Length: 595
Image 1 (cartoon, rainbow, N blue to C red):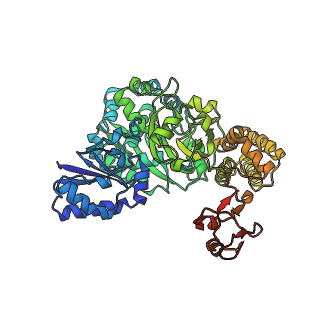
Image 2: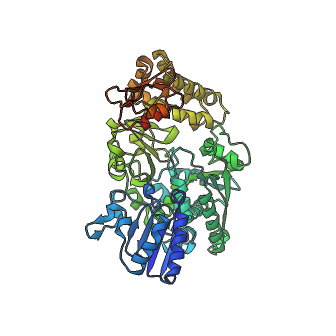
Image 3: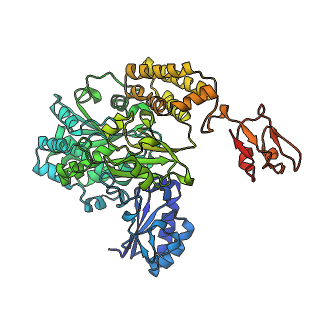
């Protein structure tokens, strides 16, 4: 036992902010003052509040240090760990309540969250199976193997109301039932960790912070459907997640929790990792399985569905990481417990990767049905710099934009579908008044054009034509007829594409046309971008009343588009201006604006 435990985030976000150096400094300094037998440093997964990384929490006090720098460590060790005096100047400010330090869970970011899929993330050392077991790990597997029949497990998952968290929202229990009922001498269990949505990092964080929960859940699923081999398909761009998953698999085998005779019951199941090359289309289940088989990741027509003919033409169960992360909690706590959260048709919680123009970026896990306003304004802290909230994009390239007028919409499957968006896998990008919605639609189409596998013409050609029309509009060359053609083409691509990539690619365009059509019209009629984003429609001007003639802007302009004499108002030649914004950034008098 140690008297103090110092938990430091070792997830990708904090690692990129130099947390390994913080951990190294901590271990060296603790050893230097002779506290190595009293204080233990624990490298965890993501705490969720990524905006404040690197994050460090000291227990048992529960003190939360944020944006920690290696040069702070000596003072924190000397004062806090050695002398017992908390260094308040380095604390997360919201935890400081006069002379008292508030519990982190009572801060604005955490108090309205319910952590189920993320319950171990940021709490345990992800590379230590003993810490997972100490938190109740593998008790669900024990319960299933020794006290439940396979069909009983499926019935519990059905009764919980858990729906797939990968995007489609299909009943998890029914998917398990279909695979269990399928005829086949061999059955496979797969995990989709090919998280490709821009701005999404939910599955990555679970694998980095709690890999054993996925391993345990896949083993439970294998028992339920009669599977003997599992595969985790994870993108190679997730090196920390891959490393920790490999460590966890080796530990599980060593403890007899994977392999030929799990827990001495004779049940056989093992898991292999397959690395993806970052193809977005491989998030589609049949394309993923084709890639695991060693072929180019392209979708296959359905039916037959994977439950009957999936990986290697055998019955296959596929769920994503977050779906599996709920399974052990459901088995241990009961279906009724899980179903008591959320809404009538959308049970439990959902993890969202909150990003974009919001103060508290990070991972958020909330009960289904929580209003979008709660996530953005209360948990997220609103838009920074006093800017007004304009829209939120849910579901990534497959989703839609939710305008400010619908900010009170509940985040659940039915409510999202009713307004033309989707919950998706959980990406949630916040936009403020400075975002151009036509440009946002173009951004997502640019992504899907690149990510289309090219197998079917509606997606391969149609998304390219949609992008070209958006490019025409944002460059100031569009017409009102183009807007009508754009909308018509979007519906054609949706209805004719082979897989969900093409079927959902037009969603960002259709939702912005629905809620922000006035911006499209402004681009083609007024030849202006209301948000001042689209460069072709921008014009930088100098206010002669404010210009002091300091010449700073002229000296900074890379193309010599600014002219004027010292102490006299300057002028920008629009024909030369490349709209780089360097002049506006340089002016100290606010004399330059863009129109």
